Image (tube, rainbow, N blue to C red):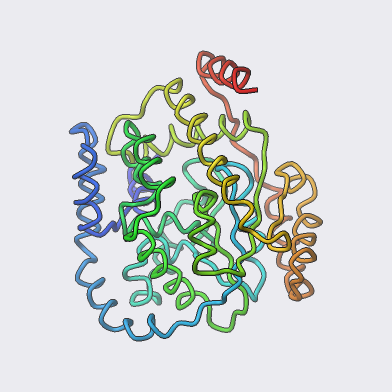
Length: 358
């Protein structure tokens, strides 16, 4: 990878973190001196835009307070690498749908103020595919909330990506537990999303696998929220996520990446705890507000799967959405997936852990 592409990928993934957020992270975890380049990029990019973040706060404070969010968002959840990104991409093609996009999540604290300039800059600089899995992406593609929230609060799952040797501790502190700071920043991010992408829109889609453990929080503020839960073979989703964590840790981690066997163990444990948290709250979701979707069905018949979602939730925009969704499916047909392979020892360890949990 060229040096310039590496810098851009790091900025899109984890640049422009607010200084106070980074400072709080350093109080919990310790970066490695060997990762000084990443530390410097994160620190300097955040400091660079901080005065503009203050300006956005002043200029948009009243508008943010007046935002009337839809009370029935569709929330796409499920364990990572289960098809949530693909479903999000397809739903975001609907011209009536507002959602978080790369142009927002890269720097939400300035995304409203700098909106006319961020998209052209990202279009010129972004790599053509995601560095973690070679999925094609662009400035206006949808993105999960957690990447934007990581710029505003340390209380996100991304803390475990920045500090991969403290992954489970961060997961349990920031995913299985919801802090008031996170709740406050999440609601701010929701309002930022609507101001950024909601003009003329009538629907709102949130994609965030972490919300699999935050059903209670979502329903507290949006009692009519509809949930789409993606399901995939545990072995396949864990194997894929371990590979992604290895790549993401190398890209943006402030600590050396743990060995694959350690990450297999941690990922198996975290997946079980994430899904247990969902099951403990499943009964809170009215039956008509819940749809479970199999990953393989989505991949094999994406158009039918998405149309079924529209039918299930009584969405009326299918005639307008079908054409753009079909075009995105055709585009995805040209995508060649990166092979997902773990080192032999890690693969054996994964199979052994799955047999024990069966």
